[in-house]
Length: 250
Image 1 (spheres, rainbow, N blue to C red):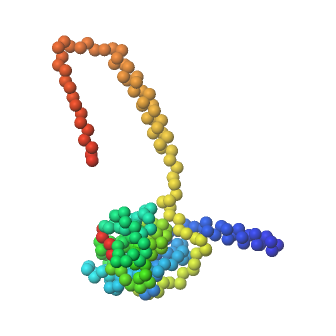
Image 2 (cartoon, one colour; image 1 turned 135 degrees about the horizontal axis):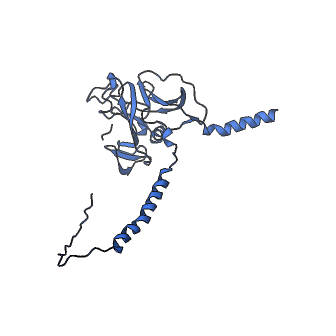
Image 3 (cartoon, rainbow, N blue to C red; image 1 turned 90 degrees about the vertical axis):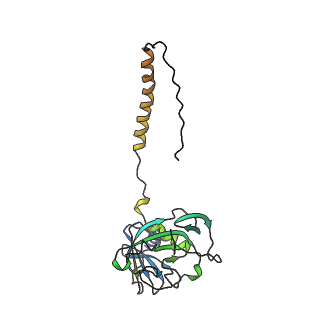
């Protein structure tokens, strides 16, 4: 009896890393605690240390503050970029920085661009409020940014992989709520990752082969009945020349 229970327990532990939360993900950011919590289906998936603005909270132009309230993931930039990749105007420059690189403070690794959903954060998107990586990892855990939410490179890459476009991000001044922890090993599975069967290319290939087989017949038909050529017809030579056709961070 005890041996069977032990086997069941071992099997459950072995399957735990493959558990996935299939519901919509949500992020809550606490300015007071300088922490970010990733949730799915009402359960806490992970908690990360972050850094909000050293100028406080708000959404006024030119104040470099972190907006409060409900926001939404509008864009994600940095798919498959290496950890430490430097972005300028949301484009990978080709440079890669290590954590705490001296004298450097660019946007790195990943960019999660937020859009405000309320009047109190309506300028968030145009102000380029991101959740992004920073080489200044020694400042994580205290307000040090210019309005964005900074994270360690490894943490923001992990969050990026589990946060879909349209996910809700709530930034609060209070502490994080008490949320039950998800089972060990649970991760959020993005629906966009699931491959879809591709049956159309086979039909296209079949049509292409049919056309290629019909082309010789079309060329042979005029050859069987040549048209008489008029006397003294001028010869025209044509030459064809092919011409090849060718943001901001905080």
